[in-house]
Length: 457
Image (cartoon, rainbow, N blue to C red; front, side, top):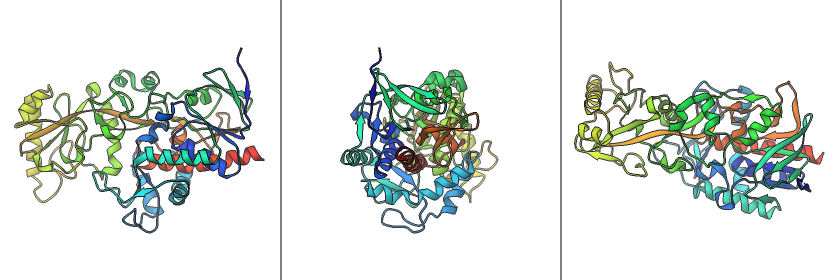
């Protein structure tokens, strides 16, 4: 028989990443007693947020941590320019507008910044970097939570949400407890670690996917909400996915496994052929299309090739590249058809020669529209790549007060959502570097505020 534990918390937060801890801190600021349930052990707390390093926010002036202004209109234009644009323009605009308030809130709750970094993504003006990265940011937040009296339970998996009509009356955990609170915030991430669920939309291709974050993100809470009648938001096949080293761990490889070489050379599939424009647009808007690009290729694998001219222009791959003195030798190391790869490189080089005064190719399909330079200087380098999924976009629909919508047109009376579990309200198919942390922070603050208001009356 299940043991029942009635908590004296006003707000129950399920999840332990950025959106969850921001929700908890905000609710506590409003005077609510908060309990946070984190599925991971303490040393793995934080979900995908452990692997982050920056956040994208609108700001009218630069400061010591950003190199210039990034006003609302520009951020809004950038968001509309990736993928198919925002899923819900009203909620997306709200996210962008409230992003301007985020840095000061973060600093007041323990965040420390570092001076802008240079690198492949070119984020020095648009994004603010966390001193020590996402892990350090989370540690600061959790220390703050401890000082505020927020109760935190680790190694606690929520297995079921109980409902009476539109009200969540209890949360069941894997140790047989029933936890109750007047308001519940669902901030437990997406379902990227459930390959069977992904397989409903991607089929056998999922066998070639890597998951950049923890294996805990299996979407259990999302499934509970959908089964209880929550309205679905976001595309079923939608996800934030980048190119990662095919030699990296299947789970939890994080940011270190991302491959940054793509704009500086060419990418071929297992047939030795190019299949997409490696120089499309600027890298902060386009780096996250490469996970999907590779997912659509035979065997869900591709290879980034570059030459000695660009050595040192980007972060080197974590596991070191393959290298050879000729393209043919390099192809053999990769177990690719050396004639096909050599022909692809030769065709590419000729297309570069036909446009000598530009950074683009001419007469090539697909083109390379920026940073097109011949591959002609040995040694040559390559690394195999797989799709690395960060988080999924399919989630629950929310109001502008973070209440979870019901498929019948109503809302749940006491259930709120923040972060990746509701990111499909904002994102469709594209992604901007650092914007996942923006969504988590903006909506964590909204959910925490509204949950506390509901609980405290």
